[in-house]
Length: 224
Image (cartoon, rainbow, N blue to C red; front, side, top):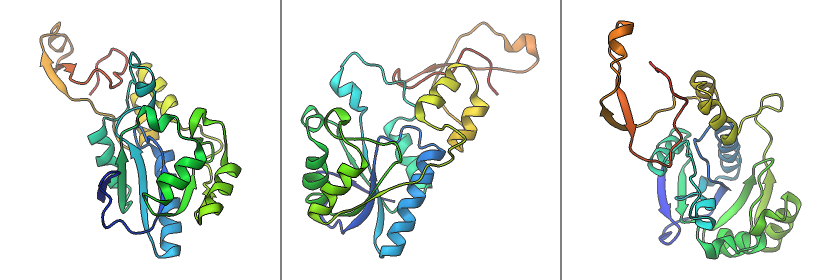
């Protein structure tokens, strides 16, 4: 996967892309990216994911604690496993939060990032206050030569979202969360002194103090 920063896109050729925060890069995200790859292959273009380094709400509300499923480096690692050709990353800024959907499509996606076709998640909205939807995006794309397509839902009978996975982790349902992730959730941190529970259950345990406070921590428990 080739990584570009929005401010350094020299050499970037026309792409088929999708835009989103992609927290956790779960099964729903992966299904969307597979559709991007399919359309890119049909058009003879490279596939791309356009994402943010920081949580948009954190920019708008400094006191907000995101409870992330994946830190930015982890997100890049998981995006690479999808087989997408290119990842274009950017900071979500106050200036960007004020842009309309038309401005994002025409000024950023078309002029700056050379997007030829854009796949929009079946329930995804973007632009100032998320006021508009797919049919508006399609119109704005047609005005500048971007084909805007609406992706199909992963599985209508099974709800998959980053918010739903957070709730599973908060309840300690890490195995069910892993099924929606398609991989095991992981935390990094420093081993600290605990209550020596391992001695009472017959095998050693480690108490981990998580390094990044913006990443969600599963419910208290003993995890193997």
